[in-house]
Length: 622
Image (cartoon, rainbow, N blue to C red; front, side, top):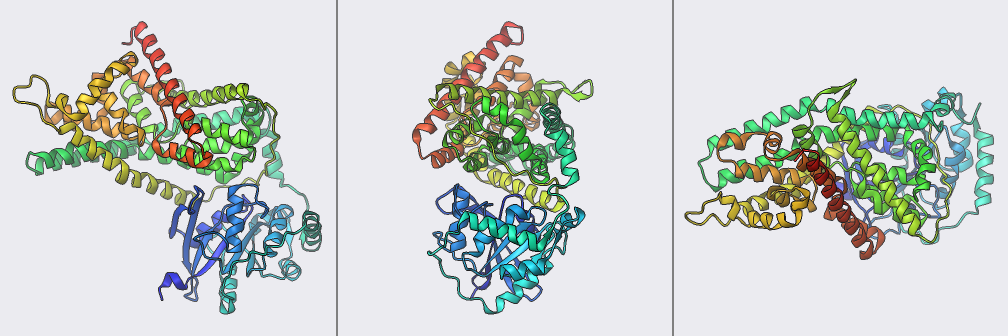
């Protein structure tokens, strides 16, 4: 029997913000596999670890839930998996329920619900170190006696913080009954659960105060209606400054390496189709996208750090009133912030919004958030047309990038406000959020999160971007120019003909035929537009030196400032990639919403780019 088949299956459950994911990272390290549950877009994370005894465990990190009375798709999946009743997923051998030692008043209630399932279960009381610092005393022996299940302390941010949990699991593994589905899930009465939680707290927990002094002190400033909003604006502004200031040395290194590799391959291989495919197609195209990996990872690092610190729910609370006036909810903030990384997980995260009206509005405007796939296009054009000079203490290129992100945010609020005016139901929905304690992000969790994002990006580079680059190279090279043709061969290729035909429609925007060609594969993934431009200009070059140059100086010499500004504005609103459209279809179950999303974004992109180009030309930038 295989090792995977003999591994003991553990299900890790708990409320959001209980430290469950940190515990998962501590136990599994880099031995993680991320996918989606069958039939839905909910992320599925599974990892493996070996206990000192040699026994192997398969650990499934279930979506955070406040109750097994499911109010969202996330909670429904957690409930069904714990019962062993989810299609395609075997029942867990043991449930590990994680609770926050500093917030047992809320978390114990969920643990009591899980206990009623009647499965083998361990209660992991996490953040015991933070509880001790606040003077909170938790009598684990009393909890274990009263609950009738094993209770162990954990500190997920310490290297040996899960030792007691692993030892207890090893001890339990000797005589586990075979896991079987439980269809007879009892439904505990809510008042009974509250009463039992109060009883357990009175017996086992001594708490000098309900909230930490440091949390209260920080919240006085960070939740202030004026100071808090100013602090949030400063944080977001500094993030975009850092994206440019910190990434430049690494980007220069990658750019130099790509150029050197292209020159070496070009000099080594004989002239011919293979040489052209490798140098002008794959290396120029894929290398033109990889160079932006440092900027993407820096942006992700800040988002992960804000999430780990407990600041994001407070930002949602701060922005609730403003977002409600625009037809959204404070709960929309986290999905929209996730959309800065990619609109797909942002749209998936709207499942936490229980009101259908607010959820649909958030899905519709999520693609207006500037996802990381747009960052390569922005970085290319800003580097080519915006001088790298200081404006006071700030970098001018960073200021322009911040303005582009701000334009996307403002546009999203305007669109959602218009949607609100058209809706019949204009009522407001109150925001109820748990504000977790502040904590310093753990380097291990940040490193694993960045590794996961880098792996996703590189899979896209090695998958769809590579495939589209090779396809575009073929379309740009075939058929060849007829004998005696006066123009360059690329004008007679399939792609050249398509690009020249499209210029009639896009001429009011200032787009040349090279840009028109790049827009087509950009529908599959926006960052492919950069690799497409790199391939087009490499094949359009009249000598090897020009082909080896970086893309930025080539477009700076070929385009006007008006064209560059028009393309920048186009990508603020550009219709989302096909994967995002597919996600909207899965989440809304409506082709109509897909059509509305793609249609309004294309209309906004065309109109805004045309106005930008025409105004820029009138001001002498054409």
